Amino acid sequence: MMSAVSAAIDAANEAEQADWYKHGCKPGTYACAKNPKTGGAGWKVCNTSKQWVYAGDCPWKSYCYFNKTNGSPYCIPWHY
View 1: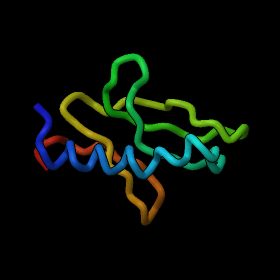
View 2: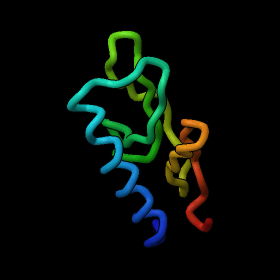
View 3: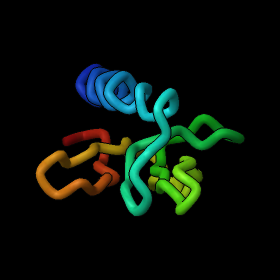
């Protein structure tokens, strides 16, 4: 079961990244995302056409955390 902390982080990441869909994205950048088929946590990458492409899944019992300092998504176990 996902903890309240990881759920809050997931919601904050989604809200922050929502504007990218409206305005396109910067090629070569990453963001947290949900798998469009399963709804599981994962990440996406911006392609050369400035479109987000789902790129991978986080392991079971983990969530995606986006590190603003280095611009990278990380899969974090729920218990952290």
